[in-house]
Length: 389
Length: 138
Image (cartoon, rainbow over all chains, first blue to last red; front, side):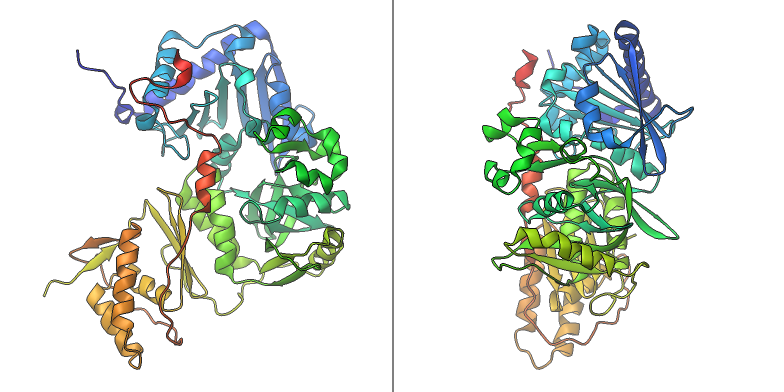
């Protein structure tokens, strides 16, 4: 007998909508059994409502957003329905379970290995991603601003999802509104801030944590929402989580050790340490800051830290690839948006010295001296953009 | 004589020229690249639809005092193809005349960055055979 394989490219829009509706009905069924818990959050100018079927997922998902929680509102700009099968004692419908089995058996053909987007859902109204390891599904309906997260068992929830939950869904939603999620820390002074961005090991998290502990407001350590209007670019907080990579990092920040939520995994070297700054250092998180510059940190062997002008192309290399590849979405749009930001803001290199205590006051002074309006001219001549639509 | 043109696949290759340096991102494998100086000029001319022959001739004329221009440009063409950043075409979609800035000659160098590889492992997918499926299915 010929082996049957699921061909998702045959799907049409009504199939994808039906898929979403089945998952939505599954959530309602789980909610009837386990009860519904509602949380509301302010993200940028938008209200995000999270509906949980049962309580099992609440702590896992909401700690990262705790600093943004608000009282219930009459309406929401995004509603996310979250449920698991184990604690709600429900199962997905039979044919959905077979569909998940197909994804697990033929993941090479049915799932993009990098973004986890399911074949057939790449460029439609309904976006869908499946993560085979922990086994959870994320869906977003662009037309109704509704999203769904399902996992079979909360115990399978990975540490990175605890630190930065719902990143796929928030990225899809942001893109539908021409906003942008970027991979960047944001550190500020008064109402002004800088995007601090570079690949891992560049000193970004160390700088962010040191700044927060020294009293500078921070919007993010890893991801933030960026919007743009007549007043310029603004960074909005998503997560109050930060991370430490090595146990030796605790020598710099020993006061954070009691706040590491995944100590066992971290000590075994299995994961980065996850810390929620809203708990570890209350008051350090700011909902938003105006972005005045892009700053790329690099570790030096000097004792003192300096800030020097930086070629925009280097800033683009620091910001674009990690944003595009960490946050699955429409990469072409993301690249263009990131490129626009780099063109409009001054760019600097933060040459990090070994005297960490000196970094926050230097950053504070630097940010206070930044111009309030975005600067159009670059370091060097301003070249015409090619290939960015 | 048949001219050799190049195509840059827009769904796979993102690129931007900022202040004379080109940043290129390959969406399929996560590698990203940098081209500056003469390398950026080669890319601009490729993107503008010029053939390999026309690009070589234009740069030989511009840098007439430099003997290795043809060889350097040919080497860069080969690297761009090897990295799947361009593919060969027999015709152009349209040729655009562009003004190149006056800069001293430097051997074009395609810098490649592979650090995004680590991000592919942020949610590791184990090596599972198609026939046996994912470990948890049993």
